[in-house]
Length: 315
Length: 185
Image (cartoon, rainbow over all chains, first blue to last red; front, side, top):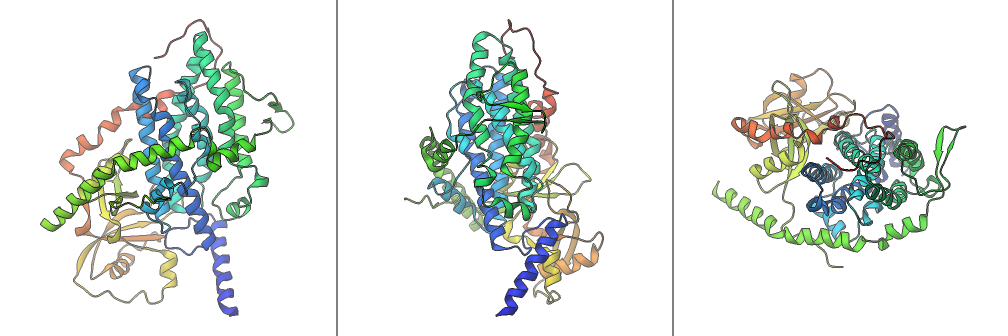
């Protein structure tokens, strides 16, 4: 029995050497089971997040304050649908089917980003999501664009190119309101108060509570840790939000001259885990909306299948 | 818990190839699910051409795409085994670089062979340089293309939607300004 183990070790060594060498692993190449499993988990959660991510902002399309803002928001929500498609495609290259993935989401077995389980209470939330939530997502996605698995990396490169528009339109909107009337400033500040902490949390648990991270980094699935990405996010966004005349809801936030970083106060991880486990403000509402969309679309899928079958018969 | 296991699911998977400009190769960008080729092309347009530039799309059923990587070729010492069957035309796609990219294999040409394995062998002979990291071969008769005569209607509208481009927003730096004025464009 020694031989297969030695062969397996040889395979693993060659695989790790390829990654260390900067090569991309492609569908069909040998990969450890744990690599495949981690990728399916991460990519499918990411795909579900894009799809559920349409809901908080989609709710405001009919109430956009101008035609320009409405066009932008429709395009953004449509992009999120497209990003879900890119990512489901990447997951499918690992041997799972689209139907399995969607079933896991609709039955509540699959996870998606905690941040989409918070409600969008005012129009300024749309801008704040663009600036903060998409800003945090871009930091994470720029890191994942370096991923050793080809299909995931390519999906991330395409998404980052489009997502920068999401970030900028949100930032432009919040800057406008932060410099606007008293009620616009109040609306922007209230949105920041509600979205700041969820945006920090969405980048995932502290490295000390993230047991998979060392292996994910070693295999080039992730190239930075959660805390590293979170620090990049805070370093960019904290000073800009303050320059905009807004105040951050973190009394402990301070610039540390010795490290050159902005240090944030303690994150409420109890809140994070509660939301992840399904007890956030609108978890049930989000899942119900996805189920309703799936059920409402059933007749369309059935009609398409019947049409395709009839055309095939006629051919 | 009740399963939502679909009675009518997402339909078969189709690989999508996008051409950015005339004279450039069609490149594999991802896949869509659709009932038939026409539906697949419309899905591909919505998913992969929301932004410029595109001039043409191809789709092929995923089950018609035969894919093999350089690692698999190196591993398989029986690669020369021929497929039986009629000679047919195959379109050949390959990937040659590990560089950061949003596309996978590029169209390089076509070969005639009795089956997909033979098509890959013929492709390696016909297109030896630069060394390929991955090959795809697709029977020509399984490929469907967007209508060239309607390319303008299919792809030009994306170019007019400049608000989707990050360049439309310029450099956004917070500045302290006169706060007495509100409003939004």
